[in-house]
Picture 1 (cartoon, rainbow, N blue to C red):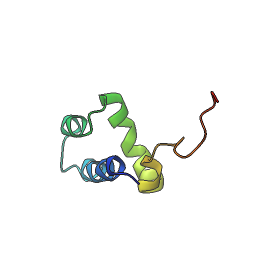
Picture 2 (cartoon, rainbow, N blue to C red):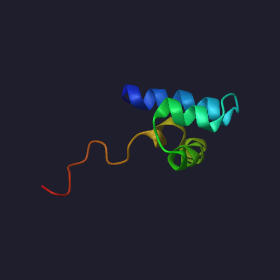
Picture 3 (cartoon, rainbow, N blue to C red):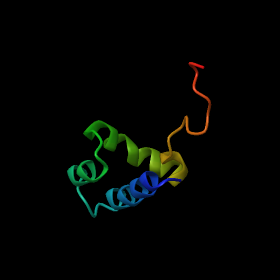
Picture 4 (cartoon, rainbow, N blue to C red):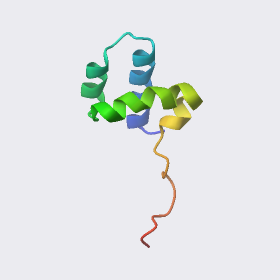
Length: 63
């Protein structure tokens, strides 16, 4: 995991524990409100491994 994913995990832990509001998580991650609303459900599902970008490490389809 890169630095961005590690930061995302920390913020998602705080959101699921209700220690920070959603708007603060949006500001910290620099993402949209819609994206940040979807992340906690993915985080609860498989944990930190599901927050990593899914196409990471794959070859692009336009080659």
